[in-house]
Length: 330
Image (cartoon, rainbow, N blue to C red; front, top):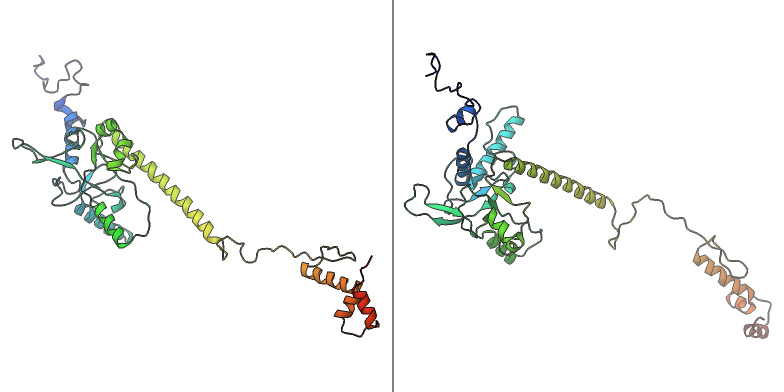
């Protein structure tokens, strides 16, 4: 083929530009990722359990479906068992024994990072060779098979408060709501987040999960970076709140609920008051002592009062005491 009898035609190195071109047949050999491969990978994520590889029951009749922050789908039961095995493996590692590799990534810290997922499901025509059911967006009708970006709506956590038994029943029924919570990205963009709050909210787009993010274009890398940033901020916020609570807890509380200085703190010295001859109050004794001094000065200056409060005998006659009692000093 090459004219010299020794050239291998399948190598095609002798063709101009053949060595650097990206050919479909050479995609797997060169380690590249084609559009078809990426589409198939996304379809697998949207239809099978990441742990077991089994096809997910989109109708929810044989088990719940959950999604992790990376947008991967799991059968709830398989995910729970994987977390238990990972816990056992960690205990073995702490004892110096190497355990099996975990089936679920460490980005899933626990059940709190696995969010329930409910699709709007339609039945396919019998002519198709795939699954009998298909997941679609409830607003646009677009099939959610990985080819179109899909968003899992994660509602904001309600503040913790004490509930009665009746309220607990209402909350349980609300949590078991079977309404779909997966929308296409196009539906969210066209309808608007504010318009969706009444039916799907309350939710914040920062907490929602992009299902089956593509590797091409750096979408998956952005999902990982955003998750790390959000968790770092949450960790810092928890530390700040803990410091505030510890500081408030260290301050003693008085009977009326106000903070009071701890025991042993320096108290303000008492200022005493004195009374001069004119009845003026100084700053060497207390107010009570000053009042007693004023009374004593008044009694001493008035003979009648002195005779009344004096236990000893007075040199004044009865007439003189009566006259002094009604006499006004000028």
